[in-house]
Image 1 (cartoon, rainbow, N blue to C red):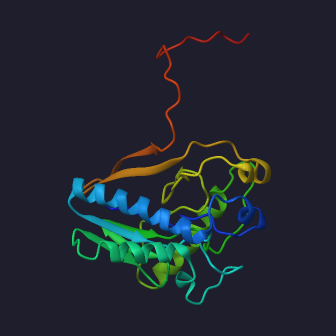
Image 2 (cartoon, rainbow, N blue to C red; image 1 turned 90 degrees about the vertical axis):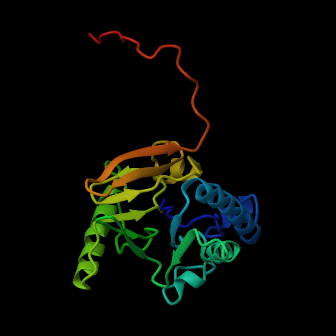
Length: 235
């Protein structure tokens, strides 16, 4: 099984309101995140036998006021969490961790080449009220594809997080957020509420990606008493 860790595991003090309202500071939050992730990986590897875990830090965990590019990955609490995980599982050869200075990881599952990144450094910006983040994400994929192809390392699909919404696009999969709806999404972005999800898909050795699901991580809604209801026709 491949488990992609795309960062933003701590809220971080990017804005004064986050410093004032976060449940805990970044360091204890990093310890808590490490404990949760380590527990999940231990259960997964016992079930599947072998894990490959590519990892990229996100923008929320950075320790600098503004994004920096030199040794970006080392100035980030996500990277600290990853180093704790690597040391914690150092004697467990069933888990292969992969974190790189480029903060992007390429790997292949059968015949599909993936590029994993967080999504905050696509070299694009913007969006609109109709298609939301789809525009900049697809423009970013085109730019990344051109860059990697020119270096002789093309990819088939890009994997990312950052935008806190689930999107299954032709060449890009965007992970939803386990955080869910909040004041920023409501009052700043004006986006619709979206249930907290994570993406899951299968890769077949001949047919490629054959199926995918949204894994809901919140409480299930109340079960309906009827599976089918005929609605009144609108005159």
